[in-house]
Length: 478
Image (cartoon, rainbow, N blue to C red; front, side, top):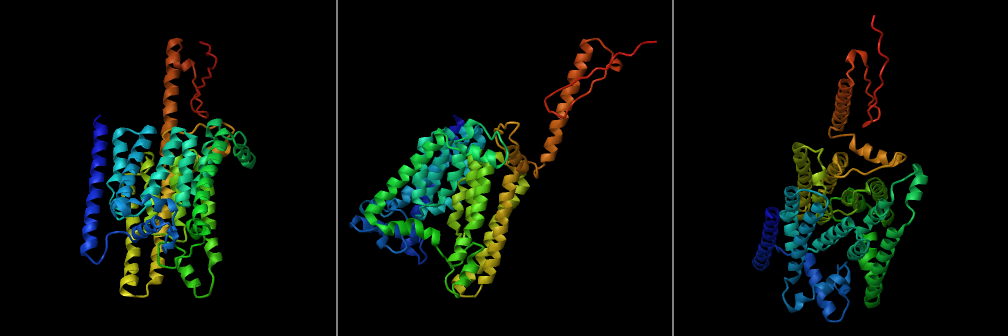
């Protein structure tokens, strides 16, 4: 009960802080030249006004979202212009509740679950983003809700929520393969190693067919309704724009400077498409190796997708930050010092980038090359963090593998025995097996009333958990 009240206090505090920021933002918008409200919120509100007038929300320039968002914000017109911000705040707090609930479902104790939920609920970054009227809290809520139903084993609801998430923003399509593979987990792992085993394991089953058909049906229905109402401009602005997008403004992407220079030579579409190749390779690799841990594979897929994306801005960081608390209790191989060092590096990488970006944006100085170099440094920091997460992750319930599943067994051994004192853990486990074996052998010798010098106990530790004793013939006493 105490733990529940502690978490309830966190939720109340998180909601109160966000509402205070909302009130402060209204005051700043009225009194200061620099506005607190996100420019995207004005885009959402204008699109809602067009819908209210019976027109297309895409009449508002730069509106690149589903019409569902404009429909959600209709009360902005009749009730209050801050209605949408309150909705985003509530969804942001609900994301923290889902983090706590999923961790409890996975067997994490109350204290640890509270701390992990507080990392999101009391985090200034999502707190500020939702209070300014940014709609990223909708996506974080949908992705966490999808994970919740995955762990609950409710395939139908998983597919419905997943389809809505893809409809809102196309990036959750990166979760399709790990979810598909996860739904075959209950029928056993690969019985044949190699590519043949992968093909056999990838065959559809009842759960996979249910997920695919439900997702396709819901997504097709939403797409058909919006297409009937707004025509091709819905397809273009909601889906195609994000695939062919070329943003030459400065951002954290390692590709931005190349794309910026290519504008002087004409079309850079092929370079933009080539940027997807590293993303596809990493997404396929992570999905196949880590599909047994949905929270981990969601984080790695999102982290790699954002890091290697051709456009990378600060709001994209929320896509994977909402998933990070779900795996923190499993990062048992990371020391506190190493954790502090990684967090410091992550913020320092952004700080190094912000200085030349400020000089370019407000002082008009030509710092494009310095921005690109700082972006490369931040890119390397993110790669290091991803490697550390993979190396130090320890699942709460280790996956049960068949003896013939050589490939699948190698996947976990590969990542969990490189760093984080894994060799020490292995030696300790072997020593414990030796101790148990010797104690058992000594007990047997005493019970049979045979002198130790007349009996030789040989411990076999080649197969952990199996104790073998071979006794030599008693010597003849002269």
